[in-house]
Image (cartoon, rainbow, N blue to C red; front, top):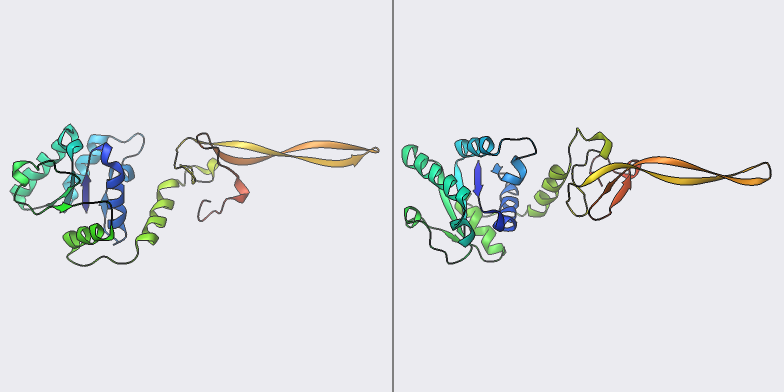
Length: 215
């Protein structure tokens, strides 16, 4: 398993790297995917560190100032020295010097998410060139992340398919039915179960949502 250590300000880069690795059917520990509401953050991180075979550290001026990143690195270095694993792979986002204990480790200089960056990353982890399944992996991970089987009232959605916000709720849409009665038009509302996003305004009636894709 590959543990991705990063500062929250470098989250977009971390997510892109995680998706590139998922496309190769590799097991990833990435906090956005592993830590959910109610979890112990420390317990989840410790579990990820204890079982990882590769430790990917995204290094930048943000990471250098991060208490969490340095704690994860210290713990991993100690374990690596003792038992030889995990393998440490630094990903450099800027010119911030690596800690001295990592100075002799070959690092990857990540530019802007180009295909060359992805190739270097996959080679460093697997020793081979990347496959061509990145888009498929992105779509698969997207559906996995936004859905939750326990949320039946929101069609098993836990995040908005449009903007990604978790501010979604069940609500009742309605339509007005008209019919003739006693020579005049009578109107009566019909309420229909639906789900909506409070952040971007996206909404769907439950019967319009594909049970497989969630959209």
